[in-house]
Image (cartoon, rainbow, N blue to C red; front, side, top):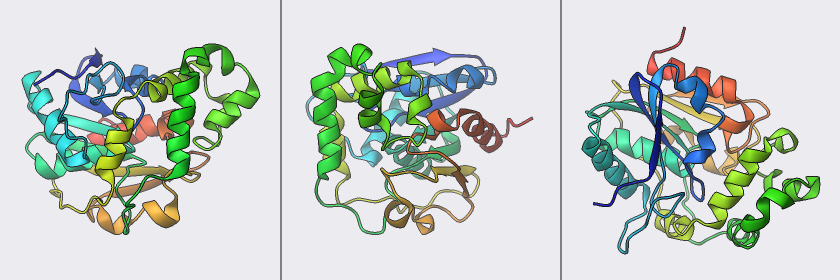
Length: 263
């Protein structure tokens, strides 16, 4: 099996970070320093994302990604670990807990995909346009995103706090989206699916959504009945599809609470 690109930091219980579709391990920069004080943080790049390859035949649906990540963590020597995921990574985190309860210590799912009653059956134009725009501009992103109009176009739908997002985060996100060979394969692999599996009540679960998530809006994509009854459900104010950007301190606090490391 090919190895997923990853970045490690800190010392403590293992904490795996799984990014969303079209993103990369760099999406966690705003919360990794705080988390590294309590955990050994392992931020991975999913296949076809960041620095990870995507060999032919790689299955990109969330359940298959969970299988891949589980094997990878085992090969790295991690028998038990906490997991935090965003969007596709959040869905993958839930699949990990459902399939490998002996491995997963806790799940913090940030704006997880898959919580819809009626799955989509085709790509949506806006999401496809975002990928095409990023692929055409990511080489000049460091210059372009210095302009307010460009930053607004790129991030106003993702974050209600787009004006104050650090430039580095925006550049990283644009580069990750623009170079992601796994973006459309991952999207196509999710079509027709949803998360609807049981997870052991012994595994703490927290689901975190922003109150301004335009990517997975509450009326269509935040169905509470699809997660286990013992899950904590948190809605953060003035937060979009990437709560770890908009509400970094609150997200870190939720992770610590879920993992049993709150002060």
